[in-house]
Image 1 (tube, rainbow, N blue to C red):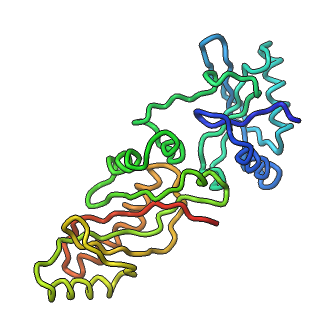
Image 2: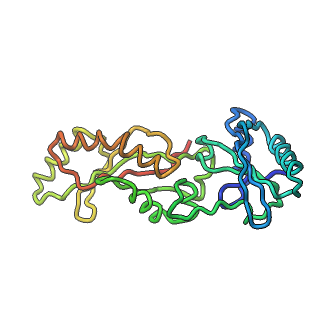
Image 3: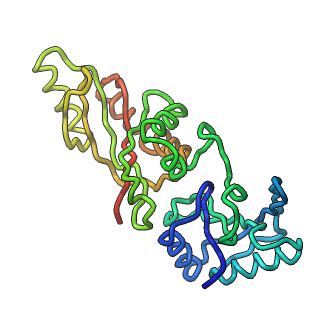
Length: 255
């Protein structure tokens, strides 16, 4: 068995997650090493490699670890490889490789919650409402988000995070006839799945074409404000409708 462990920012990877990484290395060569960290006492020093090193198996990873252990004359567990893996299968999250005997405290990348941008990392550390607030804080009005994520299964490589729909929230008309006209106008432009009253507003739940995968809070911001949002606002403006809010649904899509 290869003497290598895969880890993320704050924990060791589960066997299923390591299996995904191995499949990527054996197949599409999407994982490479561009830097490594040397652990000395309480100090972690990052060293950049002169050129990126593509890895094809855990054996390659073990050889690199051995090379750097020998070069720095340090025992097993004192080298951490920082991997680049911007692929959807692992949610484009930060990946590291080390020896299984590496202390947890030695490889943790302790990013404060308010500075973390990777969605999967945020969802592992906080509840969905907290993550929603984090995303909303960087969005321009009238946009907001709603998360619908099953955290028990999201880390499976068959599951991806996508913007899969949106909700248009409008003031509730006083008269039934005005409400009916409003619904007819909205349905003439958008693919409305359901209409409900929500907190004194009329909520139009709409589906949309599948957008790009989202991996960071800034991916969500870009897709909402640059990809979907402007067209929705434009269509509402063409209908003469002033929008109260447009809430985008970030969900786990099952492949």
